[in-house]
Length: 307
Image (cartoon, rainbow, N blue to C red):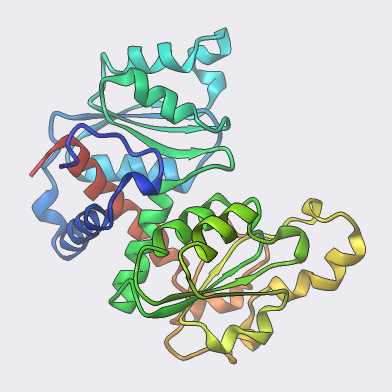
């Protein structure tokens, strides 16, 4: 039963609960008109302490498409936080006006603090480099919609695997499904953190390999999940220059990939996927953005207990 609960990290949901949300999202995709009034009279508060485009707008679009209303702020400067108000006091106040809240915050753990004081469901919309559970739901729905399953495939995660919260959350979630093989593609400086490698992958006997070069493994992948590699993450410029082109997906690299591989990216992209790839039918990153709205519609309904 998900009614009244908060979602702070993907592991808050059992595999069965994940499937429940994804199944509802599938139904919404098939017949969105049937859900147009499901949250009429309900209010979502979007509490965004740092900038966001896709996440904030997809939450707002999700609630509006369910017939509900939205209140909130899109930066800390436009709220009483600028006067020094605590997260706990902000959420207690917001709970007087709204039925559910989505919070993005630069400090890890802030949405958890909010959930402890709220009295309404709180959804973590990203807290620092920590968790981003609704992006994980988005990624799972995209894979399920396009591949028809969440098991028996090889996924390549490429780019900044050290600081990328979307990558960490996705590995944790997919590790609970059968026969998933991870190919971790990154420069040495940006490898997956030790706790992910040891506590999630090795401890659970999950098949994975690590490599520096995408072109060496792209032909083995069923899913390729790209992230940004930022120059400032490198200790010296020579390593960056040596590797930077390895992490740009263009038509040449795509020509080596499987015909049914799907290419994903949490967005925003900088130059890690060339715009020439946008017309490739395997490019799924804008489909992914749309899936984000549908899965958030399903999540809002489940946490509000709307049938």
